[in-house]
Image (cartoon, rainbow, N blue to C red; front, side, top):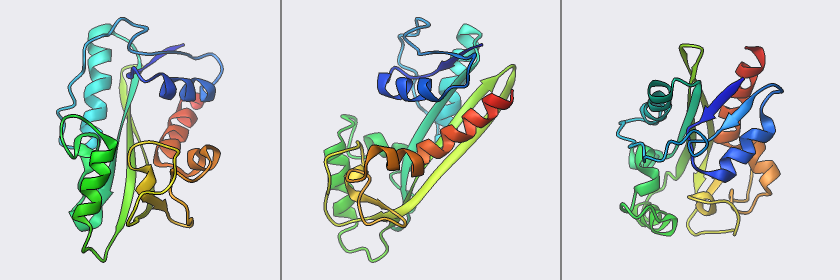
Length: 191
């Protein structure tokens, strides 16, 4: 059974390929000839994930899933949220984004935050959604060389190290993206 992951990100694609149930063939946007940039114009992570998956299903007639992820900080009323990748501007620079968050939280006593990943799946004519979250806090300075995005300033609950300091094997087990994709895989295995 063929399924499209609405991404051009080869790292994400390989990660998911390894977890797919037997009998599934995973394709990327590049594999199906979708070279256009699908605009993420939604007001929520769920809307953005649906926009990408729906574009593929409507244009190519294929089963498809897409994900969108955001960092939601309580003291910033849920920001950066849907704007996480471009919080400090359209250049989508992780260093700039982290600097902006740290500056905005400089005087904040509440540094609680959580990452959320939403997956939208169009499967056999039906839409499904899977959500994964990991709660934690934003620390005062960057730590660690691993990961990407906000990982160097986020410490998950129950840990003392940032996502950028934790081994990838642990991060993948506890992360928002890992939890959402586990739910997707469980659904596909039962289909």
